[in-house]
Image 1 (tube, helix red, strand yellow):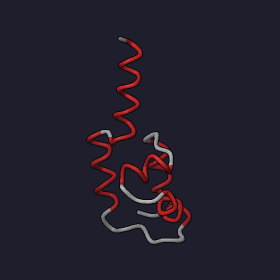
Image 2 (tube, helix red, strand yellow):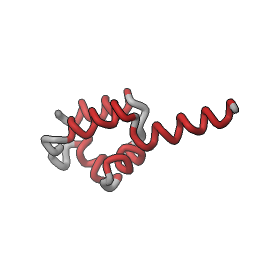
Image 3 (cartoon, rainbow, N blue to C red):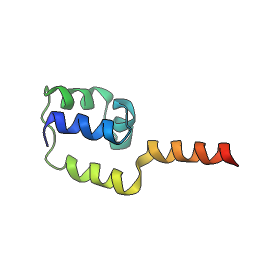
Length: 72
Protein backbone atom coordinates (compact mmCIF):
# COMPACT_ATOMS: atom_id res chain seq x y z
CA UNK A 1 0.00 0.00 0.00
CA UNK A 2 1.26 3.46 -0.84
CA UNK A 3 0.39 6.79 0.78
CA UNK A 4 -2.12 7.82 -1.90
CA UNK A 5 -3.95 4.51 -1.56
CA UNK A 6 -4.22 4.95 2.20
CA UNK A 7 -5.68 8.43 1.86
CA UNK A 8 -8.16 7.22 -0.77
CA UNK A 9 -9.17 4.27 1.43
CA UNK A 10 -9.69 6.56 4.42
CA UNK A 11 -11.81 9.03 2.47
CA UNK A 12 -13.82 6.34 0.68
CA UNK A 13 -14.62 4.69 4.00
CA UNK A 14 -15.63 7.91 5.72
CA UNK A 15 -12.81 8.24 8.22
CA UNK A 16 -11.06 11.43 9.25
CA UNK A 17 -7.38 11.07 10.08
CA UNK A 18 -8.34 11.34 13.74
CA UNK A 19 -10.98 8.61 13.51
CA UNK A 20 -8.65 6.26 11.66
CA UNK A 21 -5.86 6.90 14.15
CA UNK A 22 -8.20 6.05 17.02
CA UNK A 23 -9.43 2.89 15.31
CA UNK A 24 -5.83 1.75 14.73
CA UNK A 25 -4.60 2.90 18.17
CA UNK A 26 -1.95 5.19 16.71
CA UNK A 27 -1.33 8.93 16.93
CA UNK A 28 -3.04 11.23 14.44
CA UNK A 29 0.40 12.40 13.32
CA UNK A 30 1.26 8.82 12.40
CA UNK A 31 -1.66 8.64 9.96
CA UNK A 32 -0.72 12.05 8.59
CA UNK A 33 2.89 11.00 8.11
CA UNK A 34 1.85 7.77 6.39
CA UNK A 35 -0.36 9.74 3.99
CA UNK A 36 2.32 12.32 3.18
CA UNK A 37 5.05 9.71 2.78
CA UNK A 38 7.13 10.95 5.70
CA UNK A 39 6.79 7.56 7.41
CA UNK A 40 6.72 4.15 5.78
CA UNK A 41 3.34 2.46 5.94
CA UNK A 42 3.61 -0.88 7.80
CA UNK A 43 3.33 -3.86 5.48
CA UNK A 44 0.42 -5.28 7.50
CA UNK A 45 -1.72 -2.11 7.51
CA UNK A 46 -3.85 -3.40 4.64
CA UNK A 47 -4.96 -6.24 6.94
CA UNK A 48 -6.04 -3.83 9.67
CA UNK A 49 -7.94 -1.72 7.13
CA UNK A 50 -9.69 -4.82 5.81
CA UNK A 51 -10.78 -5.67 9.37
CA UNK A 52 -12.18 -2.16 9.75
CA UNK A 53 -14.12 -2.64 6.53
CA UNK A 54 -15.55 -5.97 7.70
CA UNK A 55 -16.29 -4.95 11.28
CA UNK A 56 -17.22 -1.35 10.64
CA UNK A 57 -14.59 0.06 12.97
CA UNK A 58 -15.14 2.03 16.16
CA UNK A 59 -15.95 5.38 14.56
CA UNK A 60 -18.44 3.90 12.13
CA UNK A 61 -20.21 1.94 14.87
CA UNK A 62 -20.67 5.12 16.90
CA UNK A 63 -22.07 6.97 13.89
CA UNK A 64 -24.46 4.11 13.12
CA UNK A 65 -25.64 3.97 16.73
CA UNK A 66 -26.29 7.71 16.78
CA UNK A 67 -28.37 7.51 13.58
CA UNK A 68 -30.32 4.57 14.99
CA UNK A 69 -30.92 6.36 18.29
CA UNK A 70 -32.30 9.41 16.47
CA UNK A 71 -34.82 7.26 14.62
CA UNK A 72 -36.13 5.58 17.76
